[in-house]
Amino acid sequence: MSRTADTDTADTDTTTAADAAITADAARAPDVLVVGGGVIGLVTAWRTAQRGLTVTVVDPEPGGGAAQVAAGMLAAVTELHYGEQTLLALNLESARRYPAFVAELEEASGQDTGYRSCGTLAVALDADDRAHLRELHALQTRSGLTSTWLTGRECRRLEPMLAPGVRGGLRVDGDHQVDPRRLAAALVTACRRAGVGFVRGWAERLTVAHDRATGVVLADGTALAAGRVVLAGGSLSCRLGGVPPQALPPVRPVKGQVLRLEVPRAYAPFLSRTVRAVVRGSHVYLVPRESGELVVGATSEELGWDTTVTAGGVYELLRDAHELVPGITELPLVETRAGLRPGSPDNAPLLGPTALPGLLLATGHHRNGVLLTPVTGDVLATVLTDGELPAHARPFGPGRFAPVRQEQPV
Ligand code: GLY
Image 1 (cartoon, rainbow, N blue to C red):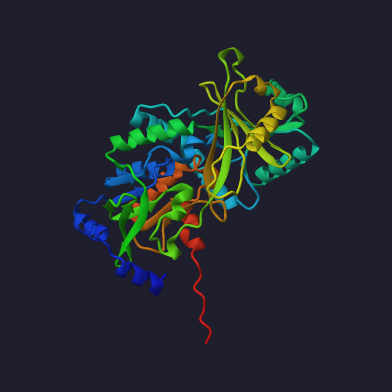
Image 2 (image 1 turned 135 degrees about the vertical axis):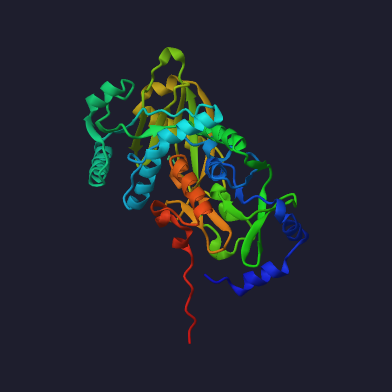
């Protein structure tokens, strides 16, 4: 795709001392600069370094980002939505890779990721929820997925803390969980051990020379040059300056408020698997960790960059979770937090080269960032080394959103 005259002019005319420094520094530049040190940026860096490329990650706080808030459900089957069959294939591919991925990561980092193959139970509290869950079951069956319909009594036999009113449920033994905070910490260590460099700072502007991405300039004016740049900044990916419009990712922040409770040892096991439901149209899930942490999430709010934890958000989560598992009101509430999912127009990620040579994307993972971590790392490492997107990633190329050139009237 050709670039606009305006952008070409801007690139040529606004060459700064920082750009000159980048050119001068190019000999020392890494092969790949990853903008964003959340789980997606980190896995991209780790996998790419393993293939022999030199990699630097730029982020003010590597290992932070949405993973610090996320519950870590690996819920390809229970989070299936109508119209997302293409995404389902990628989600399943990543879920399939998870056991080997965490084994390798734990070996490489010497750290535990909190991966648990505990399964998920999606339950219904009233007739409407039950109808919704029956629809989901039918969609799962049509999609070749494994889930088992249970009566309310069977659900409570599996999870005795469930409310007596539970009307039925879907048992999905293939939907597991990982602890995203531990995952991020393990990825930071694995990256360091693989030789990935870290620069702590905010990437403010992409530098472009001769129609090619050449690096970034940080908020403090530091210039970083690189052979290629991967933009993996979650919802912030749309805010990097200097990116030509046709290469800018169409991502937006989707706020999620999440609570963390603590299950005292005397109460364990409180829940043995992830339990979730749709209550009055809102998703609520309870994710029990082996450590005793119980994560309750999550709201889904289109409020721009706001990350305020609101009384209303906490109230709704506790109210809905209490309807599912009344005993939660006995547990200490230890943390409330809000994060921003990087939503894309079709809820699927943007992976691979953009219209601007030298600039690639790994963003837009929306509700599935933790689930899609293994496959994203492999896809980006493949395209960075072989130049080709693997077949299973081709539907997720950024080109699917590139603006169509308008025909000029004659
Ligand atoms: N995948 C769970 C969430 O985004 O809330």
